[in-house]
Length: 141
Image (cartoon, rainbow, N blue to C red; front, side, top):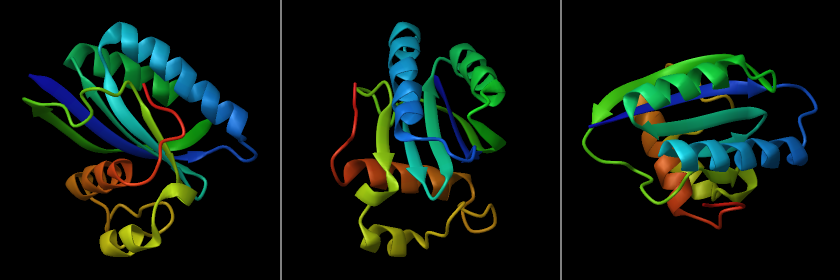
């Protein structure tokens, strides 16, 4: 059994591409060693992430994520136990908002910040998964 979480947070003002790539580089190293997988969207000044794997390791990783000063307002939206991984071969997929087709955003009713009322947990996870199945990754495992 695996644990899957999804959250939305606000990137700190002025966070540049170098910092985002540093996040992914760190995630690849940590997740590869811990057996975690997932995806990170960077859109309109927000992070949207799905993280999955061993329950203890997901919880430990999420604690580190919550303490990271590169973002604020970490809002855990989804938490579940599952038998399978959505990103079994990806330590951390990265998608930038500019890579996500407009029609996909329309189909999911995308709004900047992914308001909680319109993007509850399962919808958020579905959006991240759909975004990662379209376009070209900036960085994958």
